[in-house]
Length: 63
Image (cartoon, rainbow, N blue to C red; front, side, top):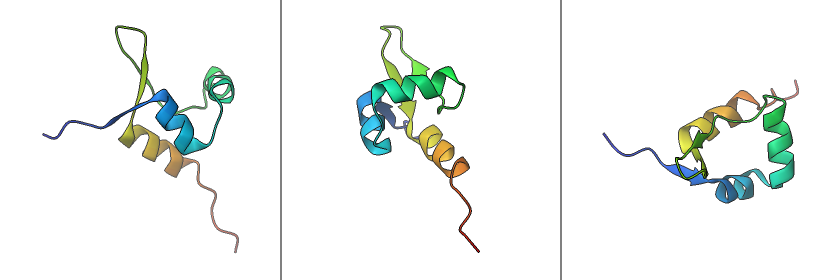
C-alpha cells in the first residue's frame, strides 16, 4: 500500500491561498479539513483529506 501524502501546514495554506490566522479561525468554527497532529505538535493534512474537503466545498455551476 503506498504511503499517503502528508502536507505540512504551510504547503496546504499556500495551496488554499489562505493565511494561518484565517485557517485557524475556520478550524475553530469546525469548518476546516481534517488534520493530523504529530507527537511533536506539528500539523499535517493528508492530501486525500484536503482534496475531499475542497470537493465538498465546491459550488455548483450557475445554470
